Image (cartoon, rainbow, N blue to C red; front, side, top):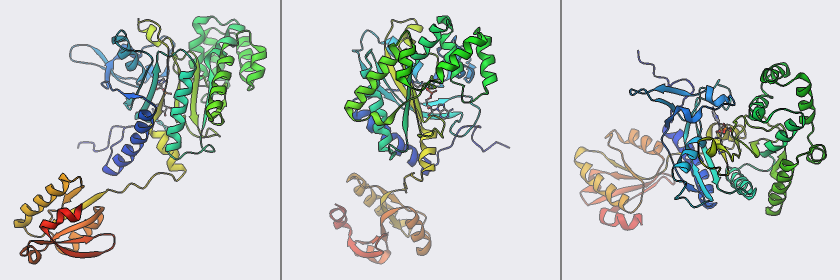
Length: 424
Ligand code: HAM
């Protein structure tokens, strides 16, 4: 027998699920457009090699990939950033930088299924390309905060945990870890919360770090004070940039959302500067959102170096967080009118009234079940319609219909020719 369940890790969206999804997307879209971002999209199918990276990113191992009938290696996109980089590289000459783009792609990752992680999710992406200054990070963070606030989250309910990869780069340089290992170390460090310290040590040693170096790295990473770090590092670029970002956010009135957290490195190897994650203050969820600066992704694809910064914000954790807080909106089906004929010869007039009302912008459904009054009214109630238009034979002989207010439970006969003016 055919398996009726959706593929493991994927979801079906029934109408009530779609209402919730559209509500969320609408908040993301409005926040993006209000902040001057333009929407783009690409196909969910991409060339597999867009996701193959030397640093051993987890994402490369989680690809849903296959060979098409012409022998091309393709993949369902696990994230949007490489597709965005591809678009920018394709039209590099005709675009006027900086550009601010957003998208809400469906992404696929063959993940181990845990709370907040599935094999398919939608991910709001917003990116600023072509702005080397940390002002781009500030703009991106303000967009993120405005969306979280529009979702109903308060200062007590979410923080942006932020660091800068250049801080870890400086530490690694200071303990003599060669440059070409840095992004691999970041990918491993990102697993710190998920694996034992022995496993972490093993992985770092396998990469070529000595036990002493790993010990020194851990010592540095246990320092949670930005000022202390500044004193101990030879290269303070990362710390300085972070101070500047916090100052800008302070001037804008939003620095209270930021929390410096040196443990944030992010699992994607292409990040080069500021990196951040959104979570509850006690970090009880998987990251709701993650992003950062990635100035060398485009050059890695063979183009010029183009500075870029952005984030991905998944629908799964966002809705989990709101559900946990009891903050999911009630979104019943909404209809202005349901038109109910009781005999097949009334179908024509029902459709005519429906078409007239729809032309005026009303949301109108026709109930053609032709059931008995009681059943039909139950159906009308469940439809969410504010008003029912009942086509009783008696009233119809006088060119009238009965309009019933489903909320007030009141009804009155109305001439069909007056219906349009009443509806207005
Ligand atoms: P990411 O951290 O891999 O970053 O994913 C960003 C967000 O997507 C996560 O914080 C989470 O909300 C959601 N997400 C990721 N994987 C899953 C999953 N398996 N199930 C449910 N939700 C998931 C990126 O993808 C970067 N490309 C983001 C970015 C854009 N950086 C710069 N621009």
